[in-house]
Image (tube, rainbow, N blue to C red; front, top):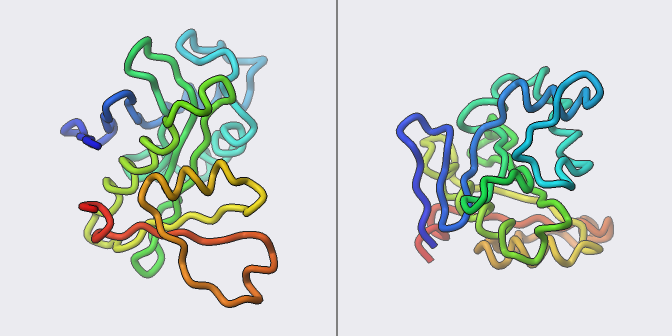
Amino acid sequence: MHSSHSGDLTQLFTERLVLRTWTAAEALAVVDADGHPRPADWAADFPAEGDGVIAGLLGDRPAWLGAYGHRLIVERAGGSVVGSIGLFWPPAEGVVEIGYGVVASRRGEGYATEATRALAAFALAAPDVHTVAATVELANPASVRVLEKAGFRRLDRTPAEDTDGVVAFGFTRHDVNR
């Protein structure tokens, strides 16, 4: 899998996707759909519920609009926005969390895996990050598969922590070249 970024770090390119930072206008269009026009390049089922949550938080977390924050997932062929992915910046003790979502109409295409792998590799290039982590509910096997296919490994947890049905995965600098 190949990914690259533009010189200003606001766009990452994969084989089929562009991961670009949100604009303030896009966030407002999600949060206040009645008061802001819907961009023509959004897939018919974008935004999903999780996109609305993230858009609502962007105003209070301006760093999330930067290079190490949240991005829209855009199909290179056609230019449709089909989801979002992001880093919950800043890292804590070298670990930054990642989250992602792809609209229902594009699930099963491998977009979430492709985007997750690219953004994780990008995050690990930052000098203060050694691990990208994600938590997922075991009741969501599709999301578990995304992380596994992206090269994430399940992190060791105590048996008591596993009883909540949530597991943690991690991706390190070592995993980038696997």
